[in-house]
Length: 525
Ligand SMILES: CCC/C=C/C(=O)SCCNC(=O)CCNC(=O)[C@H](O)C(C)(C)COP(=O)([O-])OP(=O)([O-])OC[C@H]1O[C@@H](n2cnc3c(N)ncnc32)[C@H](O)[C@@H]1OP(=O)([O-])[O-]
Image (spheres, rainbow, N blue to C red):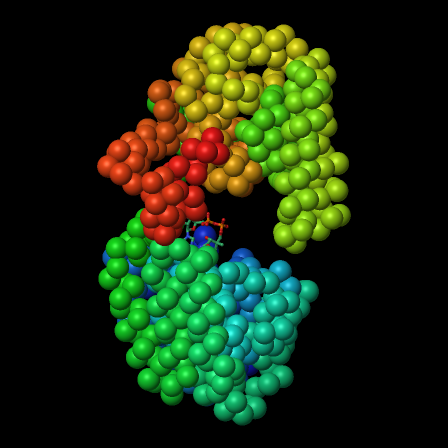
């Protein structure tokens, strides 16, 4: 799990624990053994820590449930061991240095990073904090302001920004490991006293109160309902004390999170989101055995809220889209809406004007279906009317090539009945997008009785490509999402019957952490 390689007086410890080099117990033990061996070997003058394929994505999240994250040696032990090493330790970073991986990196005496590497403390999003000294070392490395930005937000940053902040000593285009080995040789024997992060003062301490207040305000706005960001901030503020006292504060803030229900729920969600796209069918076909067909171009029927949202999700992923309406007036309205949404993204600096122009250059429009003779996929997104949908599918079936997938965006209608209007029921599937379709992550791919495994595989692959979490569901009333939402909607309605105002119900739901309350969602639908 950790290869120990010697190179001309340098010991290279290369973590090899696929898929993401998580710091499982065995990995930690082998890193410790490697450090010990390198420390004792008189021929070794410097140490490089790196990862095969990528650096280290953090603690092994499964160990928080089993408890083995706290077995010796812990990540805290490793960070202390690395920092106090008498021989220089250099981190060679490519790919991800996240969470505990980032903590290991900032405990090293030097960091060399590939230009495409990413850094971050995503712990907050799984309900914990960087509890291996990250809340104490990081402010000492980058200053209080940057630490109060990056730790409670969990935001990833690239190598260029990491260099600007002082996280990284050198950014390289070539092989970070080779560069780090070369660098390690060049600094062997130099004093390390000012390279030990825990010994540094915290920059920005004079503005501590205003920085803390601003961080709390932002966290309450951006991570509503979550308790971890506030504990992260309290722990970071502990860095203003001597290191050992700060570590005690980090431990006590961390303890409250490690015993919280939110930690369990967020970590459940982490693994559930990764399990959801993995599908299997009663016939035995599954994501492991069936490959999807890539979608090179697509058409969307209907330029209303759903149609334009779906078109936007595809355009954002670089898929050329033809937006189709029966009436020029409705088509123009849909195109104006799309342009308005993209102009909003430009003014919010989410994309540049050039990117906006490039995206919109992939949008075509058509009145009627005649031009749809060369598309891989059509998604119909007209209003929920079975007769209308069947009529559209019969017509599409006549015009589109036989291999074209015909999918229907519906939240309730029977996929088998819609498929019966075509001669290709195997290529018919329901795509249940949620409003706004360009933003919401969930995509229910509804499998009909005759939908083929290839169609399911293609829909799942398509969903991932457009940035959704695609889930295969059965063809039944309400599928899965709406069956769950119905209960929520009923409870919201009961509150109104009992005398609450819709805005009060929305406010409570939003304070709990939902982006929109149930009545605002209904207004949008
Ligand atoms: C002591 C306290 C201090 C330290 C705390 C921490 O470090 S907390 C941790 C702080 N770090 C984080 O929160 C980082 C969490 N990870 C990520 O953000 C992303 O995985 C990524 C950006 C590293 C790669 O994205 P990508 O789209 O290329 O890949 P993907 O996301 O699809 O994952 C592939 C597979 O790896 C699995 N798996 C992943 N990470 C972990 C893990 N840490 N552990 C275990 N498993 C993990 C994942 O379940 C999936 O398994 P499957 O389904 O194939 O069986």
